[in-house]
Length: 502
Image 1 (cartoon, helix red, strand yellow):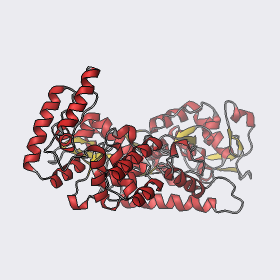
Image 2 (cartoon, one colour):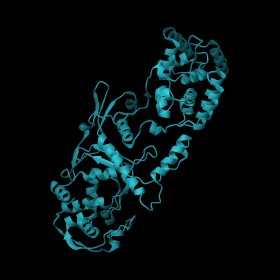
Image 3 (spheres, rainbow, N blue to C red):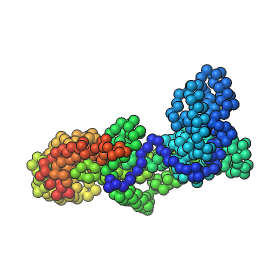
Image 4 (spheres, rainbow, N blue to C red):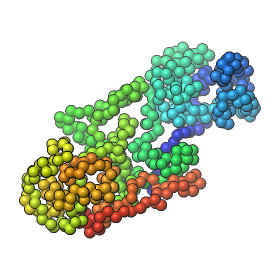
């Protein structure tokens, strides 16, 4: 929105860097593991091929490749995927041509910028930033060996898959470097002893709740294959400045609650410290879900349904459950305006008198539930009754006794129909307790439903986070504006009356 970059979504993440930005230790580690004769051969290692061929003939199919770095570059550059003897011959021919055209330094640069390192990371630069949160040139010897060690089986040996297996592959790379004289015994011992800290996968890919939802919507709009292969430019409805302000406001508010005297629940800081330690040792998958105080924010353009702000929780890296879109919680007093709207639709108006006095709790509680303050009966935290008052006053003061009477006058079914038409599709219990917010809804549903009041009774057909999707040349392949329809839910007069009360 407004031309500001909000994030990136990718399946193949690649960032090309020149040879002088690649650490010498990485080059040595890759040579040690993948092709010890790299600087001696001319594209292929005849003895290595013969050795691999004998094993393959014994097996009856291709099991061992015997490919040099140059052959691997040829295979990856020309999409030679099948495991056949014919492919191996083509690979050797192409490797020979590559060696004739480029020197060893350029071949290594092309290779390290192209090879797959697992987790959607292509090239050493993307791998260094993804796994270790730093550019390739800043990697330590142990980190270089980690990348070199996983090339043979990137997904299986990735530290995101299994830290122990990845460490074994790293140690093998260090063993080979020591055997070939690429590192000293002191360097070897120090690198073996180093505990490599690895980013979590979500953090490495810059994921947030909003970015994750955008990814889901792009796939729904254009399909998986097009979403991952076309390199689209995606324009979203997110207001970057409002998003940052909402994230900061939610964080500060919840931190203030956690700092109150006597607060004895798990805090964000406590779990974050545990999470960092687990991440450093590769034990994140064994952690229980966070149990600290959570919150969510969604902000809309009422007229269009554009999602301007989406915060699904305090930390996407800790837990990916989106509390703005997925979590259902009791609506509480946020349900009251819909009860009054249903009554106003039937002829009541803000000045109509209503009695604020106790009700038989059983009349309200049939089919109801228990809330955090006890039974969802007609009582409220303010249990003072004021007798006869106007509907406007009852809504402004959240008077439960008056609200139940107004809801019963409108009818339970009328209230439920209005809520459904407004966009609340979570199941609402057909009992008076629902008037007081006992039924669970999502934050997104509630936000959409509330648009009927400032919009004169109309609401957007749906919420959306995508404005349009463009190809690289600017061709629009999907446009949300062509799909946005408005729906009339209540009379404009009713919307004005409720809005004036709020």
